[in-house]
Length: 270
Length: 255
Ligand SMILES: Nc1ncnc2c1ncn2[C@@H]1O[C@H](COP(=O)(O)OP(=O)(O)OP(=O)(O)O)[C@@H](O)[C@H]1O
Ligand SMILES: [Mg+2]
View 1 (cartoon, each protein chain N blue to C red):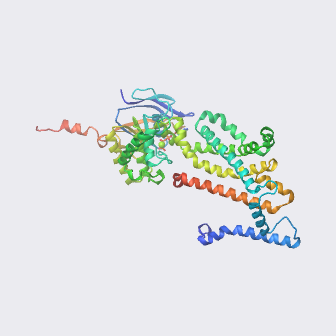
View 2 (cartoon, rainbow over the protein chains, first blue to last red):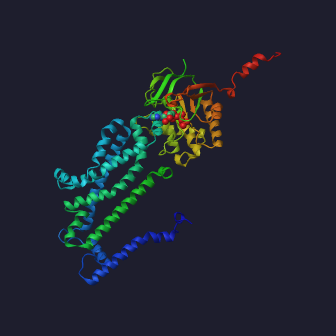
View 3 (cartoon, rainbow over the protein chains, first blue to last red):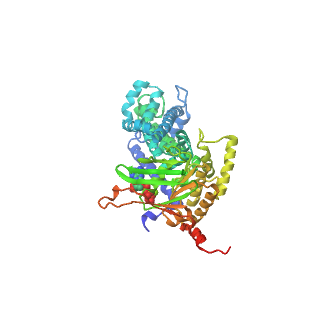
């Protein structure tokens, strides 16, 4: 039988899914063991047990100076920024995507402009954002927006343009105004695509968030990582990295769940 | 004055003429089938009737009104594909036929209940009652086209335009759809234009069969001549009109 037609069974599949994770863990554990054997005070690759210990401490013990558990405090600060940045971008992208996709006048005005703006490297304008919006929350949220909004607008307006002309014409023959076509035909069909696009832009959103936090901040996951870098506290960094990965993964799962739950009509047709 | 009149229609895309000198007048309630070779401009003519495009020259009027500049409530349409809204349930698709003309595109309260009741009757007529809550993706091709026709009729258009509505259906389903369409037409007396590739279907359903073709052939460049209506058959009485009249006049009747 051809390789393209061979499928693993349920058990084997589960084992294969776990394989790269287990392999990575073992490779790390071996490497760490080897280094620690040579130099017991090595900080570069702390033992998995040490990381677990640190994680428990970070998650439960409050900071001596501020009396807060910094881990949760950082998580909360970062999630608020990320949610605001992504949420505002999503709302703006839906509105602009619909306008550009449906109205030729807006398309003529904005499509080229958005295409050019999306070429600006967001991190290059970060200093400008800090100068204009200060070092507070605003500039970090704005960086996320600058980073992902052009992509979202381009993606969503393209999706609106992909709606078959026949369907729009059909709505016109039912007496629908431009507003009703946007609200009742284009918007509902755009929603599952919005979720797809947001899932894709979550990666860049995290990137911009951590970059902004690393440069100017007093709290946040990215801030903490870059702070403890000075002490070569790999155990803390790795705990945070694993935690960020987990958060990003869960967000992706939630978005996928929303898509399945609220847009059942896409399942069979897309 | 005829119900639908097309006077001296020319349509070109860029410098390429597709239709030329198309003249047509259709009475209210007529069923007009349109046939012709692939790419000769049948769909283009339907788009002109729909006012989705405006002709390069000439004008189309319905009931003597000013030529329309965009599709509207007086024209209903069913395409071969994409004629129903995938994000609305079967019932909501039919309700949309009445509600999309509203400022927010929907009904509320008692009006909504009444519209749903009417939509259920339409669905019963289309044999889709049992699928009211399903999404179109769950329907077969024939069911989807029945839904599209029901939805178009729920908006009560003055003319109905069908572009190869049964083109993608198997022969059995096609026959069922013919019966369905003929019944509906007998009930509503609607004026219908239907593009089809199936001559038999055209003659069976139509009162008239229009053939689109190029009137001349330019051997050096066939593309510089557009198509027009080259034949206009009377398709009533199974495509053999006047047979009853002839028999009446020539046969001796004792009483
Ligand atoms: N918007 C357009 N711009 C340029 N050319 C077009 C456009 N629409 C149609 N045409 C051309 O006009 C010609 C007629 O197209 P049309 O779709 O009307 O043919 P048709 O008779 O419906 O063919 P079929 O039976 O295959 O559906 C085709 O050659 C097509 O390439
Ligand atoms: Mg066609």
